[in-house]
Picture (cartoon, chains in turn red, brown):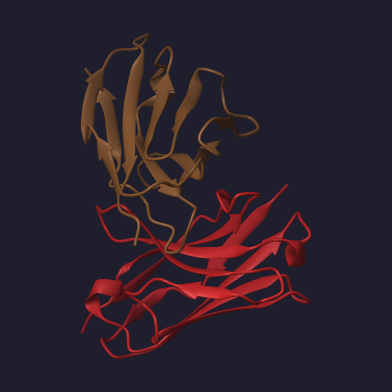
Length: 118
Length: 107
């Protein structure tokens, strides 16, 4: 059974940093592209970042480019999102998500809430 | 960036109704169009990928069609568990944009 479990969310002040982790199991992690997708409270879904199975290429949404860094450790079956210079508008539930054959998202984690507030 | 629009933004329907919702891309995305269902407080769930391919385990009352810029999701006979929000997403080019969603509620 495919499982994606996020951790690392919480309350952080504007300008602060946070690192999200996603533990993957139930599939050959290194063979799959991965994404982060977020959802602000009461809003729609926003794709944040993509990383291939080999960690290249990597893509970001313009809203996070230069502030967020996606990475993966295939030996640990883990995906990460380093978030720096956080802003109030980054407040959202962040989902770890597996990419499928046409880069659809075929599995999602349960999400971790990041709140940016003073 | 490719912009995705969905309409209607919400609809009210009864159990057993046939429901169709539409998604439009700002430029051609071939068949790189996916549909997700999301219930309150839950992660989204993939229903349809590549415009018309049913994800494993998804009931056959869900179907998708379209190519290029215009797409649709149809629920042939609405069930109580189908009351949710539905999002389309293009995976043709980054950023992999989502539509704003269609909320289906009980009439």
